[in-house]
Amino acid sequence: LEAHAPPGGDDGALGDDDAEAAAEAALFWRRCVEHTRVFARVSPMHKRSIVRAYQHIGGHVVAMTGDGVNDAPALKEAEVGIAMGIRGTEVAKEAADIVLLDDDLQSVVAGMEQGRLCSENLRKSIMYTLCSKLPQVLPTFAELAGVPSALTAAQVLLIDIGTDIWTAIAFAWQPAEGELMRRAPRHPSRDRMVDGQVLLYSYGYVGLIQSIACWAVFFGVMPRMYELFRADKHPSEYSVADSEADNAGMSSYYWTLVLGQVGAALATTTTRQSALLRWAPNWWLTACIVLELL
Image (cartoon, rainbow, N blue to C red; front, top):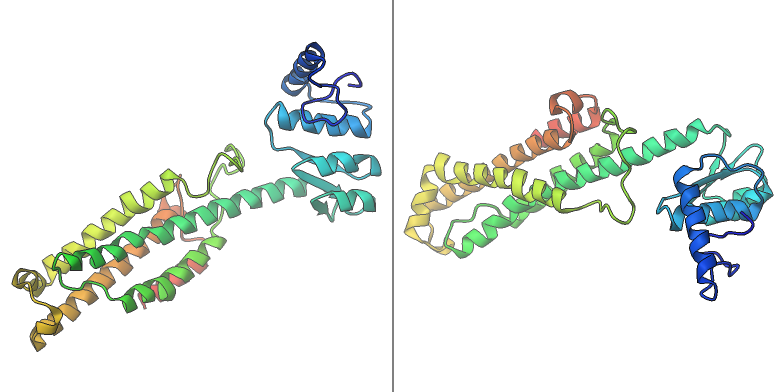
C-alpha cells in the first residue's frame, strides 16, 4: 500500500511524470477493489487511500465506519462517515456524517432500509400527484375549441389543495414492499427521482385513463353537454337551463376526476405487488381516501 495511491490522491505518486508507475498503481488498486475483501494493519492514510480507490476506480458510493482518531481522514473522505457514539472519540464524531448512538452496526442496515423506503415513498407520492395534472389541464385547451367549461379554477385548486395534498403526504407512512433490501440501490447521480418511467406512468397511463373517463362522463352521461358544444354558444349567451346543465357537467367531470385519483392512490401504493395487499396497512392513506370522498 505504501508504494501505491489511487487516483485523486494528493501525494503525487500517480503524477504525469511517471506514466508507468501510474499504470501499475491503477492496476494494483483495480485488483484490490475487485478481489480484496479484508485489509489488515493499515495506517490512517491507507484507510483514506482505500476509500479513494473504491470511489474513483470502483465507482462506488463508500460508507466508512470508525471510532478512533486514526479513522478521521477516511471518515471525512467517504461519502458517508459513520462514527460510534459511545466509544467513539470526539474527533471521529466531528469528521463523521452519522453518529451511531447505540454503537450497533445493525442500526446502519436499519438506516439504509429506512432511507430506501423514504426514497421509494417520495417517488410514489410524486407519481400520484402528477396523475391528475393531465385531466386538469385538458379542459382549458378544450375551451379554446368551443367545448363548454368542464373544470373551473376553483375546482382545480380544490383538487390540489383540498384532496391531493393530504393523500400525497399519507404516502410517507406506506410500509415497505417485499425484497426492498434485495434490490439494487438507486444511484445518487445516474438514477433520478422523476424519470421517464414516472412521467410515462403518470401522464401516459393513469392520467390518460382519467382523462378518457372524465370526458366520457362529461359528454356521455350528461346529455346536454354535447348539445351545448354543437350549439357553439359563448357562456354569456347561456340560458338558465344551459347554465344549470353546464354546472352539472362540471360537477360530473370533477367527481369523476376525484374518483380517478382514488384509483390512482391505490395503484401507486405499490409498483411490484398487488395494490389490494399493500394499501390497506397504511391507515393514514385509507383515512385520507375516505375524507377525499366526503
